[in-house]
Image (tube, rainbow, N blue to C red; front, side, top):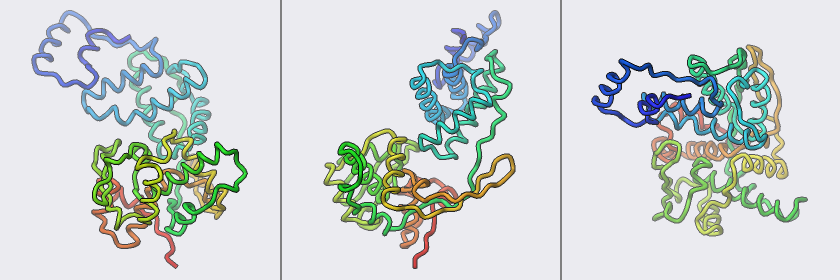
Length: 336
């Protein structure tokens, strides 16, 4: 396991002075600082990897929140403690569909796979028992048109009456909250992790403002000029006392969005090109299956571009630091 000396040196991202470094060098003349991960669990391996790398980049740990969260869900759901050697080719063939079924985008799954492979490669140097096939799987990649909705689509979703759908009363209430949350997100353009945190303090003088959890950027949205529908936005905010209509887990939220749009008839087929091991397969996927919480951000960005809002102002609202990153969010639709 991790030696006491190394624990003190790593310090979980804490900065050290020259005197601290000198003290370590003097101590290490007579003792060898070693890291033995031969008995470490998978989560311990990840924690040690984050701690070591955070010494070079204090923000390094932020990128691992998703993988730790999802692996914790696996351990809780199946009442087990994952070990490094269990991450094999067979593991990936089960873990990737598990993440897809929770509504995770392929790009996010690719990031998780890359991070976990890097952590295991590093851990193997310190005695961790890893599978010889842990790095053989490549996540399929999609090359397709990103999905965004038109203002008419958003209006249709908002005005759709759920009272007569064939669902239990409790499910209808949840779907109504998800519907309002999705429409509000289309109007404010924020990630789900930020939308669930909104309250009255975020709104002043027709301006919505929030410090984004992922980037630390303060997003600002002029409600009168940038929202798809100002009246709808205020109607939803007042209905929920300026708090998030839905605060549930994002996987349940994404499943609810797809369920809603399926009920509403968003069945238009969209071409999807899937690249696996160098081969491209083309499928036609119903549109409702491709819509998720992130579609709301794309809808906000695309709508504002189409109506002539300055790109710099839209980026200030969405939090995109570069124009290249922002461009990937714009999905032009036919104006006819």
